[in-house]
Every structure is written in structure tokens, then in C-alpha cells.
Length: 268
Image (tube, rainbow, N blue to C red; front, top):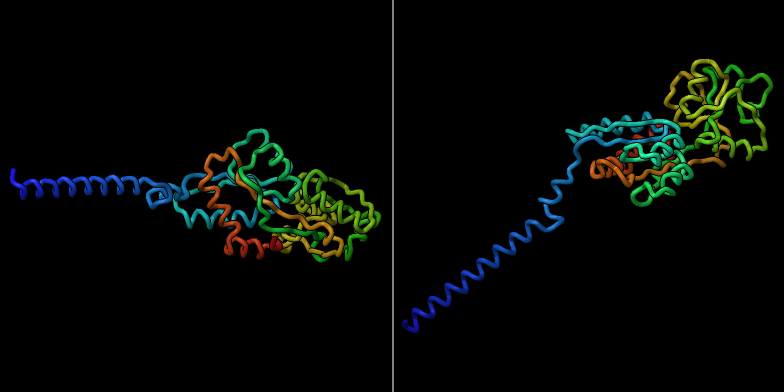
């Protein structure tokens, strides 16, 4: 073989090796995490199940509809109720993706059992208001007025956040109050007034606003001593964690915060 032919063969061998190396590098790059191929699989899809405090019902339903519209093919299902009852269901093994509680103390029921993935984040705050019958026929203007003889007042049970907050407010005012009933969540307490089964109830400002003209709201200064932080968390055994994270991102986004603010919630 001539020297020229040998040189030509050597150049072809080097070129072939370089091409093979490039193909190998390209293949590795296409399968590396964080690329477009990998991120496309994290597109929200399927059903996400959210357990949320009863006071979040109107706002979260609005956000759920918005989420489904923004992510075709997804579905957000909700379980609303007293935060303590929801927390007990979660620690008992109920399948859920997200938990939004009406107090940090209630969220601790879940985190203490290590059923949350990561640390919960406060996304809104809420304060109390007195809900009276339309027109406020009993002339209620303060928390002390609820102690008037013969007035039928409803409170949330102290095991749920709205009841704990009401107790803090009453203690701050040095007041003692025996309600006609203790309710298991804030919506149940409000319903007693809406149905005229009670003259007044201590509920959240957001619930009074959601009720429209069915009740009338009365502010009281002691509520400042009982403002509740609302934490939200991804659950450890979430069936659909990717879509759950996307829903939580909407809740905490400027868009989500606008919906919550319009409902009367305070910024975190």
C-alpha cells in the first residue's frame, strides 16, 4: 500500500470514530433529565384530589374550574369540611393529593404523622366576623353583645380552627358565652343563621361575604387576636403529585391570590 493510500485510510478511520462519538453524545443528551422530552411528561393530566377547609369552598371551586380550563384533560375534585376531620381522614389513609387547612395547628396533625411531602406553606390568612340575621334585628354591634340573655348564638366546635379562633377572641375580650350549639365546620355554623335557627354566629369574614344578603356581618376588634394562617401541602402518598403541584402553584400565583383576596382572605 502506498503512503498516500495509507494516509487516506487513516483519515477515514478518524472521521468515522468522530461521527460515532457525536452520535453517542447526541443520544445521551436527548435522554438527560431536564430536557424538553423529560419536561413534556410532567404536563398536568388526570384527576387531582384536594382536601380543603370548608371556608375555602367558593374560592377553590373557582380555582378548580380555572385549572381545568387551563389544562384540558385534568379534573379537580374536592372534599370540603372541618380541617380536623379532613386531617384525621388523611392520617387514616384516605387517598388525596393536596391538603389546605384553616390553621397551622390542624396541619400539624398531618405533618406529625409524616404524611406531608415537604414543608407546608401559608397561602392566605382569615379573620372572624359576626354573622347576624339580615338587617341585624338584634342590634348586635360587638362581641360582648352576643352574651345578651335570650340571644341564640352558634359557634364552631373548638376542635376546628374557627372554634379555636372564636375562643381566642372571647378570651381576649374577657367574655364567657354559652352557645345554643357547637358546629363541626364554619359552613354549618353559618347555615344556622341563614335558616333563622340562630340569631348570630361567629364565623370567618370570607363566609359572611360568600353568603351575600342571607346574613349581615359585624366586625369586632377582638378578631385581630385570632387571625388564622392557612397552610397548604402536597401529601406524601399523593396519587397524582405532578398535577397536584401545578394546582398548588395556581393557588399561590398572582392569579390565585386575586381570587382569594376577592373572597375576603388576607395575604399571607
